[in-house]
Length: 78
Image 1 (tube, rainbow, N blue to C red):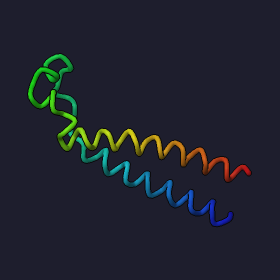
Image 2 (tube, helix red, strand yellow):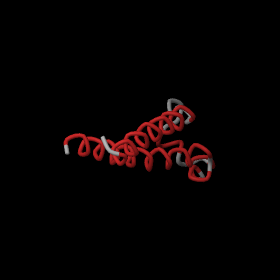
Image 3 (spheres, rainbow, N blue to C red):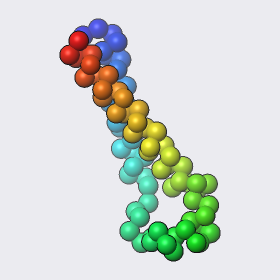
Image 4 (tube, one colour):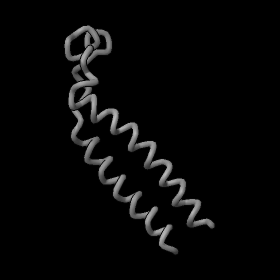
C-alpha cells in the first residue's frame, strides 16, 4: 500500500468517527409528528437550530464517507 492508500484509509476512519459523534449528538425524533412539527416555531426554524445544522452535516459527511469507502475499495483492488 502506498501513501495514497494510507491517506484514504485514515480519512475514512476519521470521517467515520466524526459521523458517529454527530449522529449521537442529534435529538431523537420520536416525539414529533411531521404534521404538527412543521407548524410550530421550532419546526419552521429548524434549519437554524443545532439539530438542523447537525442534520446537514450528517448528510454531507455520509456522502463523503460513501465516496471514501468506494475509493478505498478501488485502491485495494488496483
